[in-house]
Amino acid sequence: MKEPKASRPHMPGYGILDANSGNGLLPWSWKAIYRDCVMTQRSTKGATPKGRFQGRTTISGPVDLNGSVVEGTLIVNGRQIPRGNVGDIHQTW
Image 1 (cartoon, rainbow, N blue to C red):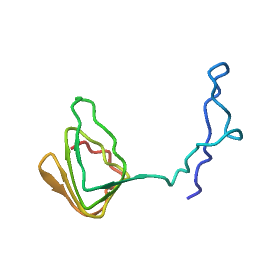
Image 2: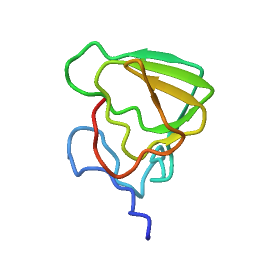
Image 3: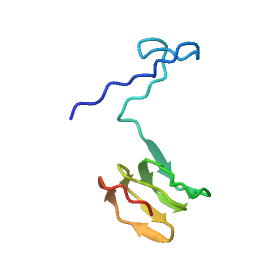
Image 4: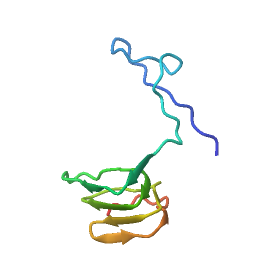
């Protein structure tokens, strides 16, 4: 699958540079690595902590992990999520 081209919105007067100016655009392949951490989502709106989960990570609250990879132990709301890719289904735990 071809990687989409990174770009910025066109917003004159707000100081946002176009994609060919400046720096700071991350490639689409970039994702966070969560290792041995505890996260609490206090809002009722689901969070989207996407990335790789390594070590032992515990999350409390509504989250959508679509596109993430579990390489360690991931516990969401008291339920252990199996290792591997967290499929293409947007499921909120």
